[in-house]
Length: 414
Ligand SMILES: *Cc1c(COP(=O)(O)O)cnc(C)c1O
Ligand SMILES: [Zn+2]
Image 1 (cartoon, rainbow, N blue to C red):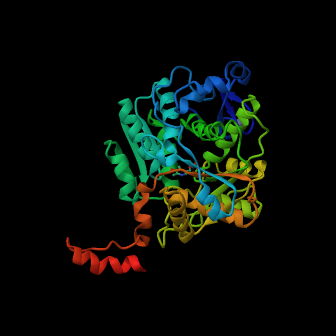
Image 2: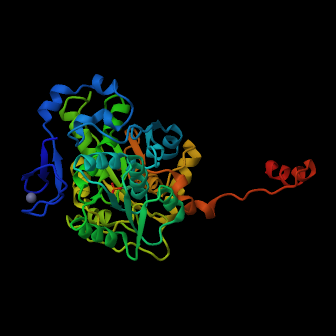
Image 3: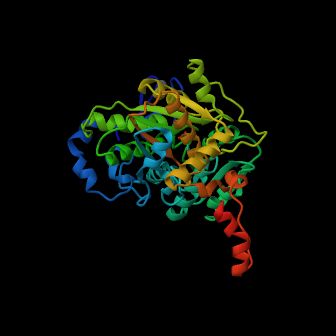
């Protein structure tokens, strides 16, 4: 890590807990000394390391040794032949962050990086603004690190998601407002309290952790990038960083072929500010107020004013990708399709990406003979409420053969 650099004007800043440029208000991003990394890093070196996100440590923003996340990252990239057949595709993989450790979502990538850097910078308290999964990850990783933890949520998050934070006994502040209001409040608080808000004042470090998803996809495909990746989009971290990761690998000579990857975005129709701008051909992302009535199926992606929405849009355009929305029904059908074809239960955000992948294939935006990676960023056990009404009925019987014959056998014959 060399410095922080403004994504707009290119000015350089020291690697402190800062996230906006004093001159132009652009976002700050970590810059590396790529020449030094190139001299030092090879495929063999990476392959020889433990299977966690720190195997790419030269491209992650720490000065010293990592202190957290030794079991996080390196999630399966699962070949998905049955899903491929259902989509009419030849080569499909699922990047399964529903198995990320320990909180079963992609946030187990960004949090260990952000918290390790926060500790280097001397922070004593971890905090975040969250739609649910980030809170789970910050609570778990800070418990392990012995750091007190404060989590800000929009009031009314589903209990199945909150249990995964509350079990670690953080202080949870339930704000009577939208996620965007929670996020704005945390931005104000970050300047008053010396806390590490992992996705606010530590944002430049946090977002770098998301590159590991791109690194892993390329490594797991045998040091090649796929032709298409469909990613979910909320705050807009994942898209630009998966792209940055793949491009870094290419630039460092770690890939066997030039990158032709198109990055595609998936949002829920109930909250789709970036897809709206994409479809309008606009550079301006108009903040939306996420629909609340009827309550949307998906909560993890419910960010109406995404911090990195512009950069996500730029990534879609520069990579030649596209984006679509999924309706509530399409999200649930996407979850069911992945379960039925691959035996994999993804959370609602994964339903959004499967549904959108299906649309993009149908539209011809993803040609059927090209390779596709679909990101399943969270585990279905976290959003059980979403699918409850569509589950099959259970068959109650008495503990007798007669009862089995009477109730079950007729069903088997159908
Ligand atoms: C946070 C999250 C995302 C997307 O996050 P970005 O802020 O857009 O990077 C996607 N899926 C799940 C399950 C998440 O928790
Ligand atoms: Zn600037």
